[in-house]
Length: 378
Image 1: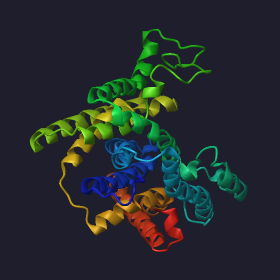
Image 2: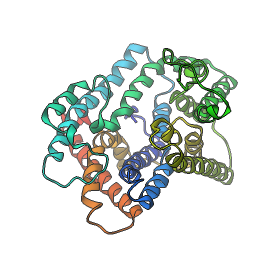
Image 3: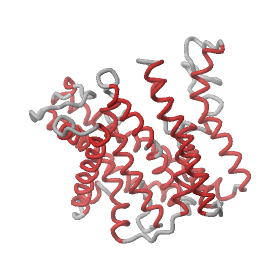
Image 4: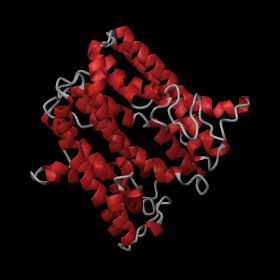
């Protein structure tokens, strides 16, 4: 999401904007998913649309990898450049968002989002949120979970880049094979108890994981790092396929992944009510199903021959700012649209997305016009 602004590849800029839009779609679906027990058709709409857009975050990670790898500078220089672009906006919005939420929730506007806990919006609670972000994000800054993860990726990128520059094609393929195995483990963890597995001390972790050890067999080959390696591999060794083969392969991969994502997500809500870790398995960004969807989208978009126009370049550059500020705008959109516009749930989600993307774009663009506020969105 935060590539060097001097690098603009048409299909990458386009994909960054699309991925940003899909992130907002996913967050617009959340309040509808929260209505499982009160309005099942709305839950189903939110679940199926939310499942459809799950590649959004992995695509952002892959875009960063495309534009940052290989790294041709020392670690200190790389960290310094990334910190200037990453930390200041992160710090700004980690402090500002709780204040904006406090003002909004206490403004007298009717809040209809079922996910809002009104008890958490006193001034004392807001003050705590403004400094405890150093430990982790809170509801007001939910979208910033991505930045914590991205910081970790950036810290490791110079190490990974040094290996990738000297690794043979077959070596990278072996890495990806092992990583793909790690994407299947969440499903094995669901099945294992039915085969007699009880875990160690009640902990359901696999392959060495227990309460006092989180580093299982595939720990070092798991997570978003796989998308970084995958992006590097697909750009370095692109598939020279025809458009027909690319579309067929990409669409098939996406649809298989989507069928698993949507189907498993809906089923887990019925069979594992209240078991949050299991409820999120199908929507885990590093699960095999989301990998299949992401792979399909990436290879198709990689084939697109498009020149990055000034508008597309600007929009792509603003995606970080849009992402950072959009979460509260989604909240406002839900409160303004859900109770008052009598259209089907999928139309409400679309209207909320257009509203949130448009307002967030406007905020990021206006802030980009000033040399001081520009630092918080670009």
